[in-house]
Length: 445
Ligand SMILES: *Cc1c(COP(=O)(O)O)cnc(C)c1O
Ligand SMILES: [Zn+2]
Image (cartoon, rainbow, N blue to C red; front, top):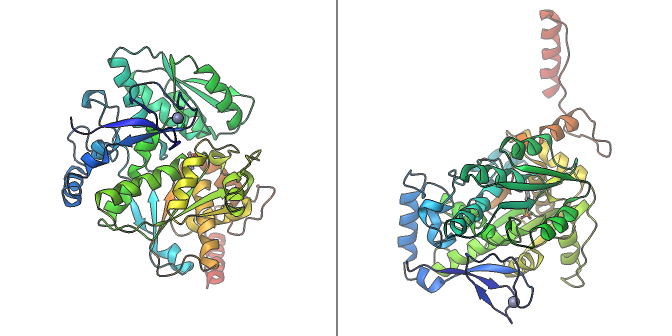
């Protein structure tokens, strides 16, 4: 097989390499993060036109494993896994739709939403997990001793890990911060047979424990520190460009917590640039919750004196992270993509969700963070009506219905629900019902 990829130390002064089948999360020599590096010279031997034709041919077909949005790009993602060891549920290929009504209310006629939550377990985490679990299956097939796969999670990684492990008959162990994930997110790994551990701490605390527990390598660590996941997640940028008839957008807005996904987004664009599929880079906007904003503070300080923060409770629970693992990767990508970091308060993210929902969406709070950041940047003129903008919607809103119920019933203590829409309770009396309808429709004008 001509295509090759390996783990490479993210510290350019070290540059140590390790095979993808080795169990490695940090560089053994210097301790830096690892990234998956591809032999891009081999990839670039095939022309951009040939790659685009191949990906168009494979898209959504059933020839194993290429119908998956991730494995459609197998040569770019993880050529090391044999097809029979791929664990896929045909993730990816989520819809990218023109949000013309929301866009027109904010003066952005060319606004698009990439609905990554329309996936097997309801979040973009599926894109990375298919690659990680496939590699685990490959290592086990090669005789490696892995007893289980574990992760710390804010709710979506655990759901994805549990589902993909169950499909492959591999035991999963998930570490969740107790009472900090939604009931939907909690039941997902339970239903899929994971060993579910609810710890009395937050995500950062779970992360510390899971790293200790996986130190002996017979329990494989599935956190986003594991750079195999980034390879699957980077397919989102290729998918967006393919869905836009192989054109890059001008701006992509993405919510960030542990910051793996923003790194992945940029990595996908860089590979397309290297191959010659795109010639311009979009601007990348990373949006953080104000309650968990270490990247935002670092950016505002001119990328000087980075300090982790103690993340505070936020409605955007999947990004309640104060010490993002992939910080360095994200900063590099943001510098390379003329990046912006913006933040959203609880009030702003909740109202942003409600505004989007009123135009037919059903947004998760993290997507609300991204939308609130977008609204601010449009107000400030940093994004203009000429820009083609894509907002990455990271999870399915149905995992967060409780948040919406609380919003519309005005039960979120710290905020005012400006767009609340309450049900009207009425007796079973046609005249009363008619008069209420008439009154309401008249009010709408
Ligand atoms: C994981 C997650 C994020 C954040 O992604 P990072 O890679 O941690 O920055 C955002 N939204 C949702 C719904 C998530 O599950
Ligand atoms: Zn190193």
